[in-house]
Length: 171
Image (cartoon, rainbow, N blue to C red; front, side, top):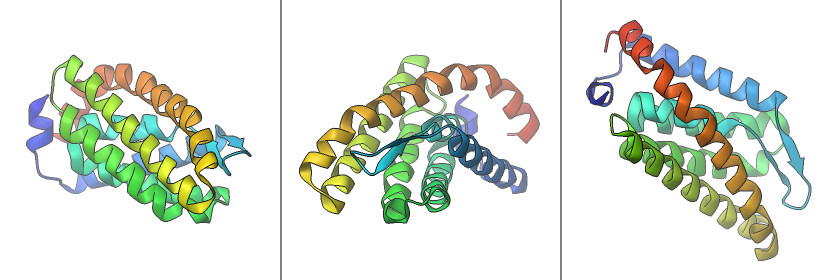
């Protein structure tokens, strides 16, 4: 799978990433749970970010992560989080792709865990800046659950679709 990471983006890859962003946003809009204490919500966005990161590497991870996070906040009525989500989810996707794309299963699991920790830290800082330190702390467990659920969903999906994506995108 390491050849997936080294390949330059072509039109088909860019279109696939665009569809992944759209699918990620739509699924996350329909499956989100507002958390009043943090002024945020739990969603499935991380699953799509991790799928893109493990298949397309760091560039795919940052594109899907940043765009999905920003668009989701805008469309769900959380504009105060848009640019923070662009950074937190973009960095999450970049790190997961950099550390896990084309690597062994163990390295992929470590990459997903690292991406989750970075996302949780990003939202802890965001909630603390926008609201209070207590709000940031309250968000840590819910963001950990969200990231872990995304990793648990993404890992077997990536294992199952990687051969098909490779063939379809002619990478």
